[in-house]
Every structure is written in C-alpha cells, then in structure tokens.
Image (cartoon, rainbow, N blue to C red):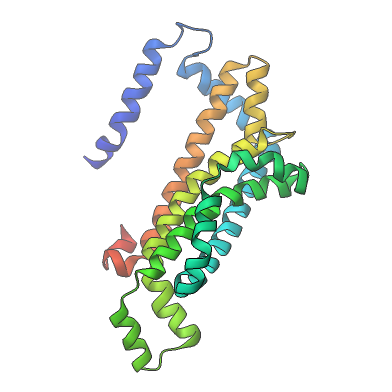
Length: 249
C-alpha cells in the first residue's frame, strides 16, 4: 500500500505529460525525453558534466556546513556577540545569492573556486541561523546540571550543546541542500564550459529540446536522491530525538 501511495502521483503526472505532449515542439513526449536521457547522460557527459557538478555541490555544502555550525555555535553561546552580529547577519542573509555571482567572479575568477563560493554563499545562512537558534534554545536546567557535574570543554560541547541543538542544525542543513542544488546550476550558467547548468543552457540555445528536458529530469532525480540520503542520515543522527526505531525507518 505504501508503494502504491508513493508511485500514484508520479504515474499520474507522467500520464498527464504523455497526454499533452506533442501539442508543442517545446514539449516532447516522455518517450523522447527518456531516449534523450539515456543517450545524453549515459555517455562521457557523466564524467565531464555530472560528476564535476556533484563534486562542486558537495564541496560547497561541506564548507557551508562547517562554517555555519562553527560560527552558529559561537554566536549562539554569546549574548554579546549575538547582539552585535545579528543585524549584520540579517542584512547579508537578505541579499539573494545569485546577485553575488558577478562579484564572486571578480574576486575568484570563473573556475571551480567561484562555483564553490557561490554555493557556500547561499548554503551557509540557513545552517548558521538555525544553529544560532538551536543553541539559544538549549535547556537552562540541563546547562546548570552540566555545570554541577563538571561537564566542561569538549565533552560539554559534544554531549550538551551540539546534541541539544542538533534538531535545529539538521533543519538548516536540509534547507541548505535544496539551495545548494539551485546555486550549483546558477553558478554553471555564468562563464562556464562544463557542468549541468551549462549543458542545459547549451541544449536550450541549440534547440535540442528533448535533451534540455532530460537535463531538467536529471536535476530532479539528483535532488530526490540527495534528499533521500539526507533523510537517512538525519534519522540516524537524530535517532535519540525521534525514538529508538528511527534509525531503522
């Protein structure tokens, strides 16, 4: 029954797509897109475009996670630091990351570092702000208990601060993942010669419509795969929070 519920909507969407396809040159049938998908992405483009894009995404996401959690913990633990930095953080968070692409290109060039920095510039904010809120919301009673029992230093950070804030941190990481995929594509549309974003735009300019749709389909599948992987990791990390059976869910 669960499998039926999961597959019902995708099957209906594909049937609807099939029914209206062919009415326009710009809307090829699922069969045409499927053939283009196999011919395009099960080729050298997998190594030349897909894997480098995924590598840049994971690199930018990892840097944003380390910076966001590290700074978020420091800011969340210090009221004075939080009061000083909060207006500045809110200002920079409000700037759309795609607007920063021309500036990052001037500072970092047009190669891989620029693309990674674009991803970091967008992913870091949900992680940072959620970490700050998670640390701020730590139970004061538990904080006093740690002090009474002499839990300090790295042990306090690992067992109390990071563990207590981890549900909020994982929320930020989940939000950042979807933002990272969007920025991966945007960064590859500027002065690039490889990557998923570049290839999709190239197909569009050459009126290779089925191939263009196959790239969009690949991005959706990539996002779905990363989301499922993240969900498993989240359930494992927060097994204490969701219950003993969460790690097996």
